Amino acid sequence: MRTLPLLLLAATIGQFPAHAQENPAAQAINAEGFTKHISKLASDAFEGRRPFTRGEDSAIQYIAAQFKELGLKPGNGNSYYQEVPMVNIASRPADKLVIKGKNDSISLQYLEDFVAATRRVQNQVQLKNSELVFAGYGIVAPEYNWNDYAGLNVKGKTVVVLVNDPGFADSTLFKGKTMTYYGRWTY
Image: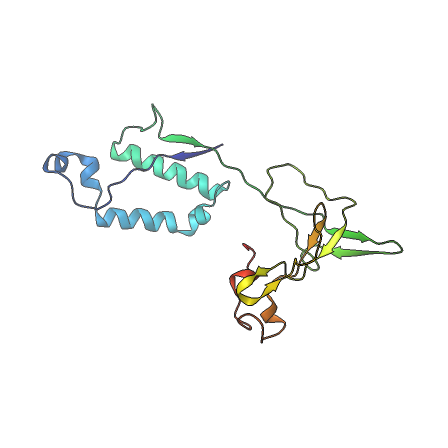
């Protein structure tokens, strides 16, 4: 669980009812103040505000302090914070990957020869004694009449694929050297 401040601001600045003009918090929301706070939060001091980092913690504290300074009441009982379930998956594979064949083995160096990651929320993910199946780029792209999985049995096996898409190796395929969505990590 991560703690994030409740943040509810008006959609448009400066469009408050007449009675709001007497409220110091409402008066504090203006273009100058908005620019100041966005500039502050976008500064290097907050290190990008990435979740699970010191930058995120600093941003949370800054926003809560600004809410208090404006005289805003907490929006979650007595707290400016709300529990939000989040996880951080940071894959840190072993430095070497050893692939054993019937008669020999090869050792691959992490980031130089292979990349491995997981999206599983587990402390450790291991891959032992799994049959490897090479599937080219791992792409199924009907619009290019391409299917790297055609005829392959990958059930219960580990699929090994290349990075990018076929156009990088052969400029007559896909969109040539212009990467398509199929060459992206997210695919």
